[in-house]
Length: 390
Ligand code: PLP
Image (cartoon, rainbow, N blue to C red; front, side):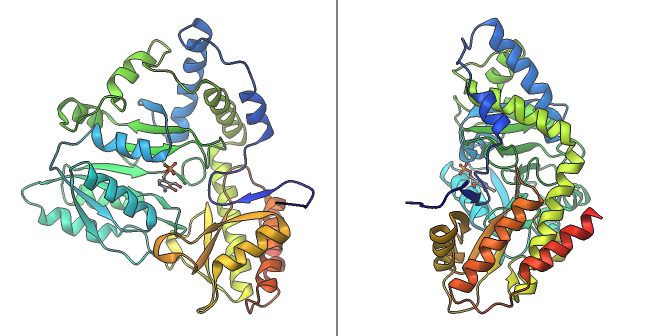
C-alpha cells in the first residue's frame, strides 16, 4: 500500500507510462467494429503505423501480448521440423526459443553470456556452414529487455547476405520499436515482432507483425498449424478497413493517438531522446561506482539500463526499498540475473526531468539499502543532460 502523494513512477522497461493524451483517446465509446466509422479508424491507424516500423508493407495487428506476436511470426513462415537459428542474448531470447521448440521447430542456439547482443560473425559462420540450407530462419531479439543490450540488426543482415543464405530474418522489437532506431524495409527484415506496451506508450494488449514480401510468400507454403494467427485473412480484411475477429477497438484509438504523438516529435528525435537518457543513466551508474551489465559500448540500450549490484548484495532488496519509500517500480533481474541486477526503464513517455526523478530515487534507495556507492550519480546525469541541452 502506497502512502505517498504524487504519481507512481513506473520505471520498469515496459509496460511504460501511458500519456494522458493516449488515455483520453481511449476513453471513448466502443463502436461497431463492422461499421463505417471503424473502417475509418483502421484506415487511419495502419498507414500511421508503417513509418514507425520503417515499412511500406503490411503490419498485422493482433489483440495479444508480445508472446502471441512471437508465435504468429513462426507459425506463418515455418513448417514442422524446420531448423531455426537463435542467439542467446538473455531471458527473452530464451523464452522465444523455448516457444519455437514447443511448436515443433528444431531450434539451434548460439550461446551467449547475457552481456552481449547477437554475434553477427557467429551467425554468418553457422549459415556459411549450412550448405544444405537447412536453416529456414534466423531469429534475433533487437533489444534484450532482460539485459539492456541492443543487437546490431544491420550487421546480422549483412552476415546473412555475406553467407548468401536464404534464411528469413525474424526480429523481436518488443522493447525497441519507437524507442531505438529500427528500419524493417531498409534492413530487409522479414518479420518484425512488436507489442503495444513499451515504446508505443500504450497499455499491454496489442501484438504486431510487420511482414516482408518474402515472408508473405513463405506463408503460402508454411506447414505449421495456424488459424487465429494467420496473417492472410487479416491482411485481406484490413484492406476493407476491418478484422476477421473482434479487434481491440479502444487500444486502436490509443494507437492512433500514439502514432500522432510520435510523428509530431519526429522519430529521429524520439530515438535521440532515448539515447540521451541512456547516456545520462550510464553516467550516473558509473559515478556511483557501479557497473552497467551491457559489456559492449556499441550495444548499450537506449530503452533501459541494467545495473549490477556488488557481489553479495540483493538487487531485489534495493528495488523493494525504492518501491516502499519512493513509490517507484524498477525492473527485476530475470532468469539467471534474478537478485543480481535491477533495470531502469527510460523508454516511452519520458523526459529529462522524469529521468532526474528516477535517478534521484535510485540513488537514495541504493544508499538506504546499504549499497556502497559514491554519491555523485545524479549530478553526473545532470551534467550529461545539461551538455546535451546546451
Ligand atoms: N520480447 C521482449 C524483448 C520482451 O521484453 C517481452 C516482454 O517484456 C516479450 C518478448 C514478451 O512479451 P509479452 O510479455 O507482452 O508477451
